[in-house]
Amino acid sequence: MKRKRGTHDMGKDYYSILGVPKDADDDQLKKAYRKLAVKWHPDKNPDKQQEASEKFKEIGEAYDVLSDKQKREIYDRYGEEGLKMGGPPPPGAGDGGYAGFSGMPAGGGGGYSFDQDAAQKIFEQLFGGGLGGGLGGMGGGLGGGGGPRVRMFRGGDGGGGFGGLGGMFGGDEDDSGGGFGGFGGFGSGAPRPPRTVEVPLVCTLQELAKGTTKKRKITRHVLRDGKPQPKEEVLEIPVKPGWKDGTRITYGGMGDELPGKPPQDLVFVVREAPDERFRREGDDLLLRVRVPLATAMSEGKVDVPALDGRTLRVPLKEVVTPGSERVIRGEGMPVSKNPGQKGNLRLQMDVQFPKRQLSEAEGAQLRRLLDGKM
Image 1 (spheres, rainbow, N blue to C red):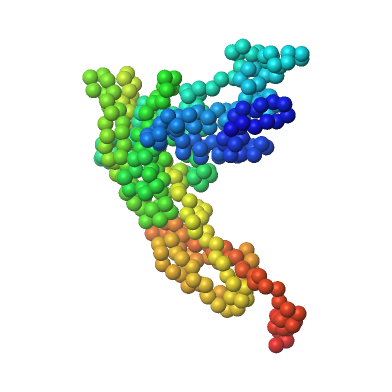
Image 2 (cartoon, rainbow, N blue to C red; image 1 turned 60 degrees about the vertical axis):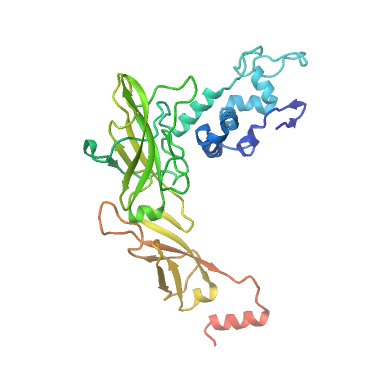
């Protein structure tokens, strides 16, 4: 896409590529990059690898430029050509080349460049974990080595990004959303494989409430005659009731086998999928409930859903004010450290006012009613 600003041909529109405004801050850039990079990673698009590779590189380049203050300043003033030539043209140079700017090298090949390896490195930096080694999961059952180690902590952003992504697109046997599968090393400049590979394990609130077993089709490399060979297996991972976003399940030494090094550890990181109705806060569930004004002012009842599909009838024994909260004890998430105990369901009341304005007579009648004169 081409655009003009002043007399400069801007070339690629990095802002449009990421879908962000010109004044986008770091958080907006990261959020846009994460979403697009996962969507267009070549390993997630086996049927259109060439197109995906170009898009993936373009997305990485846009983020690299806009997230760097110096590069972004040059791009905003002189466009893609000025950036890649090293800065603005010197006084009196016309169109005959570019000189150094803000520490950037002069033109003639010394300006900005970006390739596929650079795109991959940005992906690894933002998602953590590293992708080298082609680990798609782990082999073996749950019994070896005494089973996994589980560490629990609260996630920071509720699924707005993975806390480490060691790979994995497209191999979850029981996830309708596609899940994540094996991820090979990418590009000739792939970094040294990490000691620990982290893999997101996406779970719904219902799965985290009841507990479940997630099946994952995985690929890891094992050494045969000193050479790494891919090995595919199906792994069953037990998810315990009450686990939170960020819970880590570690399988020591059950990742890729590396020549002359200990095998990698494999860590599954629980990622809580957003729910259309409920929001989780610790062990509590929050639910927005719309209440008609007449019901809010009278001694009525409202029916609300429970997470397991039941319908709960809640009596309203006092006036419901906008933004108030009702608590149903024991209808939240299981407390993982205290089996049998649950958090609460907190109803956030959204009082619905009528859209039609009352007539003068209706208003007077309502005022008399509220004043207790009827």
